[in-house]
Length: 370
Image 1 (cartoon, rainbow, N blue to C red):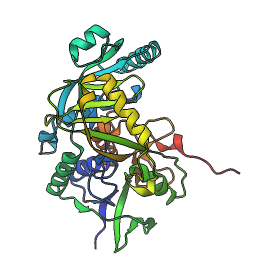
Image 2 (image 1 turned 135 degrees about the vertical axis):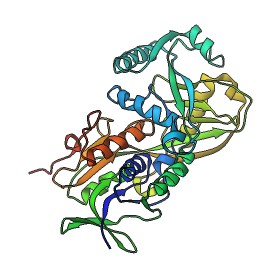
Image 3 (image 1 turned 90 degrees about the horizontal axis):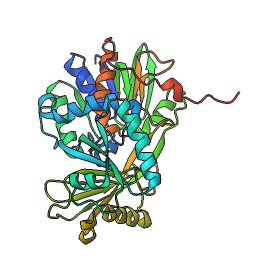
Image 4 (image 1 turned 45 degrees about the horizontal axis):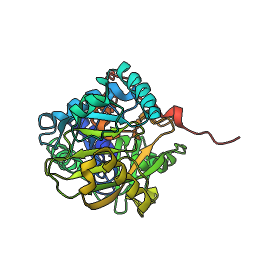
């Protein structure tokens, strides 16, 4: 069988975006995913699209990706539930206010339209906000999308573009023979001339296939959703410390996140166990921020994996020492930036000059002790 032009390993937002842009450019693409498309880390996050939790260095990328999300019917062909929401990042203490001001200044310098407002103005923007808020960062181009709907949309778009999808197919190892990558699965071998590793939290063991040490920290985030409520908030909320992500959907449910940790490892896939104290702490913080939530009942909680590099910036570029092999992933707020990062990598594979710089993995690799 003739090798594919490109094999993409990993079917999250970044892997799907890379594969889609390559397929639409005429490359024969096979995408292999151990579960379902956007059903692993990309499918269990809060779906937040925000500039206020994005590292300043990533703001230009996130702004371009935000436009992709909001135009999902245009480039993906389906609505993914993307909605524009006013965003507030709130400070309740003087220490949080100083942190908020420093971060807002850096992000604003990078292009994020963030305005610092006092507590009274913040409550005009969000009437449900606690009276104890001192100040807030306000951004009119925050929002969210449905991670579940994104997976469905990518599946339809990739198939329409001619990509071969191999879901429920874990890649067990890769070697290069005769100038072609050979990807071993439990049932067969897939061959491709070029390779993209887009495995998120699994990029560390994937890099080890090529003898590279790429540290990837794995977070086990806990998320909670409430029962359906009458409207209690109109904005997308966070707090300056980063310990709260809060939004109410059109069906009335409120999603509570913020990176409070559960128990698990990369091997668990979706975490192993909740830490009750962290669930309670997250919900108390949500109710403190939006007092009307004190009356709400939590109906479901789940664990989601997040991959982080040492500097919280993506790994995005050629794999050192391996011709025709590339890597993408591990970005803080990666759901927000994912589609645009995938386009950048696809452009690089197509021999086009990327619009914005890549994030080469060389800076992150560890060297064995002599």
